[in-house]
Length: 481
Image 1 (cartoon, one colour):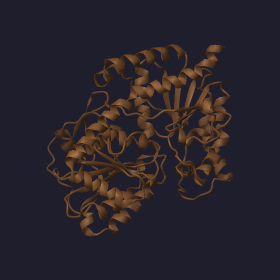
Image 2 (cartoon, helix red, strand yellow):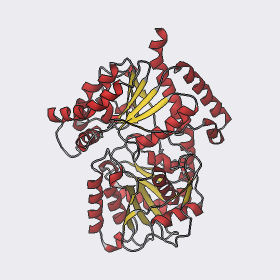
Image 3 (cartoon, rainbow, N blue to C red):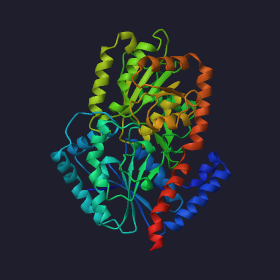
Image 4 (cartoon, rainbow, N blue to C red):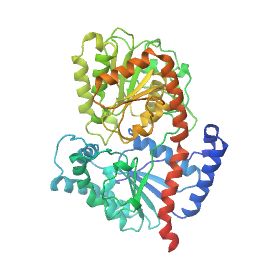
């Protein structure tokens, strides 16, 4: 068995972005792309991460690689192969970098040895495919342990960290202590979503800040008309109503027709919410940092029980995300808390797991749900960026979110959404949701401003231009030679 999985990504021509971003911005992007083709001639950009689907990094890579290939950049994507023990360790590190204790387990010599052992076969295979002129982009703690070995190939090594905390604490220090020996002398550049996420030992001249982006044409974000939204949600059981034959259809990202064939696993009392009632949605991984339980408690306690609003907490099927061993536990905690709620609250709160067999099918279900939502929530305790925020903003939806991490770079409080100062303040979160449910005019205005903000800052051309700037700095030593 090979340790590495190659993920196939179809090239997408960037010209289709022009209808959204306008001719001037499209011309700027093409100028940047032409320069990148010139200084990257003969070089490949190889991305390495730990999962091909089910998380924000995988979604980002699908978008970036598609457009990079569309402008003539040689880029590829491989996924490492490791076992459950490895992902228990890396999720521990992941939580620590967010400033949280996670499972409280150790990160001693035994864990370090297990981490390195699991990466050894992946490293052996990579040594046979990485060339000196390659740029290797390693994503997150799962791949950090490969940097030293890949450095020996002569390739340029970039480590991209998608998680972090604005204010370090003892937990973040512990997480960085684990990763630092693998990175400090082996990495040519570090990429963070926010400068504050970087530890103090990262040299300023190697630090690059690149916010993520969304693809407006992906299955997750493409336009769906109200009939398509209703048909999909009724078919999977998230909205009440008769299921019409062939109503749950959509278009794959390559333009070919698709159909939703699988239902969503739902925990609820009674029927799903009617199509015409307000719906609050949080769609996230089942991850402690997303605080699904907190969203549920805030809704049950502070969103008017006399109203007809419902809440849907939606995440991937827990077996569908290989690198997240905590997902099942978090889902069980949510189910237990839901069971303890009063009956009246349970009838308005729905927990749902989206099937992950077909990534496009999963994506279009979330797309339909976000478009149907009256309010989208992201009550994270910590957040690297929060792609679900940008996705909802693109869909003209008002978002109520925590003032943490990359969320604050997306939402301007009171202008493009609502920020809650303290993630643990359930009353403030509930009041913010309640206010938007009671004031549709304000909710609409926030949603329109949010869409403009997402278009201006968080589409793929902006993202790729920032990576082009990074790659140009890596090319300077080669050009000098």
